[in-house]
Image 1: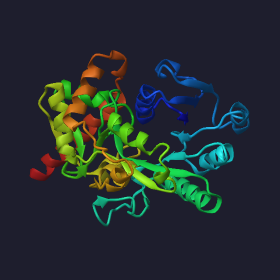
Image 2 (image 1 turned 135 degrees about the horizontal axis):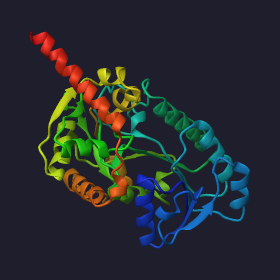
Image 3 (image 1 turned 90 degrees about the horizontal axis):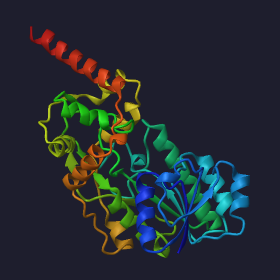
Image 4 (image 1 turned 120 degrees about the horizontal axis):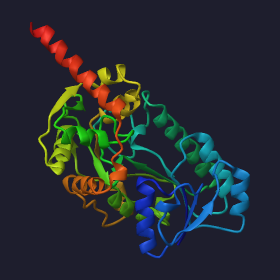
Length: 338
């Protein structure tokens, strides 16, 4: 199989690349070459900016692919560009969408690919929906061989999966735990969530590559394990070998007093209970099963970060913000009790 990945150095793309190269896939990575030190050995690097359509078209003019995957398409114009570039040059084009595109609030906590797409809280999700709409139109009207993949919360060894501040660098939360400081959990911590290890995601994804039954389909790839946010933070504390000290804070309050996008990242995503039904994936990829339990995956991540100081990036602004929120809530409780 000859595959082209646009991007290729992120959480899910890196895991997929590693597994594909172990299977002797003819893998090309198209990116700007800024992170060559993280590229897997054995892949062919095509150095270009995907946003420079003319340069990319010239670069690939003599190449055709079995599969093209764009890991960094976030807006409709990105997939429109890809359509122009790869129509007639690939047997399958895979778009990485997002499970955050599913209906918020959910009418049913059990999510299938048939769950409506609608997220009024997060522009990121609305853009992913618009990308899907465009690609489905090209599939129906032009026969463009698309497959849409919807990941949920997928993690690797470089970043701890969190609810609050999970997209901005996660070491500071671990550092607070190690210092026995209180950490913030959104809501009351009992909403349901699903974490998927990148290696498990990669197994399901590779099973969709070159799969004729996946053409024209939307498929979600997640673990079947469902946990609460309280359990997630307890698992992190256990992996660090410390006692968990936590305070629960309403997502709306966090959004109101932060410059971070908790309107989208929490209210439009992580504050909702989600349970994914992966029946469709298992039909398309017989034998797929996510085998990395959350406690196992978190332990691997914590161990890796603790032994790699370059991943221990401190965030003093976030640390001070946490202290302010906690002090304000404790002061409010004191006033009310008095």
